[in-house]
Structures are given as structure tokens and as C-alpha cells.
Length: 145
Image 1 (cartoon, rainbow, N blue to C red):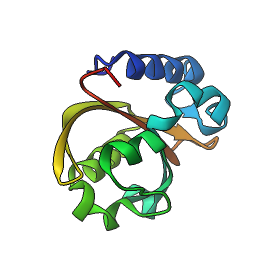
Image 2: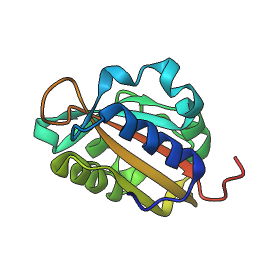
Image 3: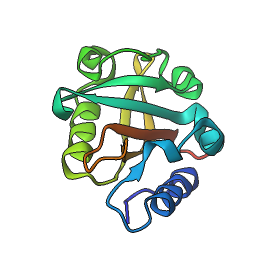
Image 4: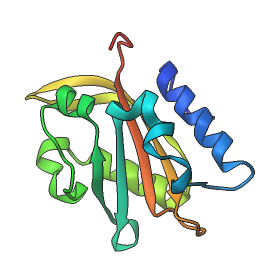
């Protein structure tokens, strides 16, 4: 089990567990926009590049843009450290390297301020044994969004 308490993140984690069945990883094809609809504005999809040493934001949800004040779609995580700090890259690398979900509760830079947030990172496969994609979701810790 992961260490998050936000109900939306717990439900996304339960879906990931259901989709992976007895396998180590769930598959990316099982998480289309219709399946992700309840979480979509809070979701980011990241493609692993350079053997998981960096990641490209394929999708950066509209609620995340509103929460943090920037859109990272199409950008590499490593190129955005001035906006997001170094913690996200470490979190994504860990989940990718260990093929395990990660739950985080911490503060994050947003609009020149800090936002208390809860986050989950879920590794996904495109059919192989290694994670090719990370599915992450972020919510404000207050739960009143």
C-alpha cells in the first residue's frame, strides 16, 4: 500500500492495482482518457527517456496548470527544475527504477508560493517488463478542490 490519504488518489491507486492484476506493472493501454476522466485535470503522463534518467510531460492536466501557474506539456522534467524543483525528478526516477508506485505529501512551488499537495506516481508499461510511462496525479492536500 502507498502512503497517501487523499480519496481521489486512493481510488486511482485502486484502479492501477485492479488493472495490473498479478503483474508488476499495469499497461498504458488500460488508462485511456475515458478511464482517467475522474482524475483527468489532475493527471500528468510522463514518457521515460534516456533509460529513465529524465521524463517528458506528454500531458499536464488543466487543474495542475491552475494550481501551479504553468503548463509543462511537451517539456522535459530536467529542463523544468527552475519551476518545480528537484524533488519531482527524484520521485519519477525512483518509481521508474523500482517499478513501484510512490505516494508523496509535501509542499511544492506554485505561482511564487508553496502549495501543500498529495501526489501519486504509478509506473506503466507499453507491454514490456520495464515502465515506459509514468502516470502521476496531484491534488491539494486540503481535499476541498
